[in-house]
Length: 148
Image 1: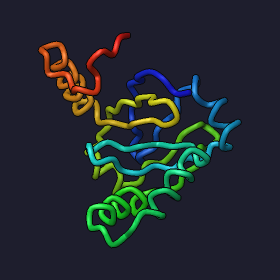
Image 2 (image 1 turned 90 degrees about the vertical axis):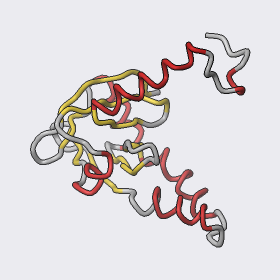
Image 3 (image 1 turned 60 degrees about the vertical axis):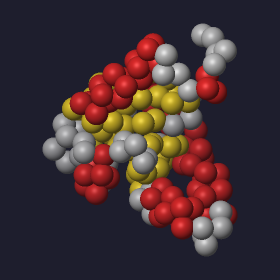
Image 4 (image 1 turned 90 degrees about the horizontal axis):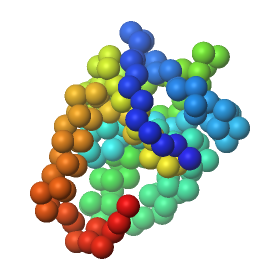
């Protein structure tokens, strides 16, 4: 289970060092084989390969005659990129994916249970500010009655 926010830096080649606290789990669950794809919110999603495969299968099994479904298939599956952790526990984030998410040197890796989100640090901070709007009564109806 991946949790927490980690501030990291991409190196000049676009490599990301996976934090030590996740390395053992990634080695045991997928031998360091990860799938990186895009998210409509302009971040990247990073999945261990076994967690990605059922998602990809579900997406590919959707009716491709629906233009919205087809667009989502193109976006998520079409941009999926296989990568492996190297001996230094780094993964390469391809140039097209970095460009899509507007990633520069300073990034944020956010654990989301079975996957990670990778954000440009400035964009992540804007996401946090937007999330704080809930305190002003702008809470979605599906969260009414939800308690922490």
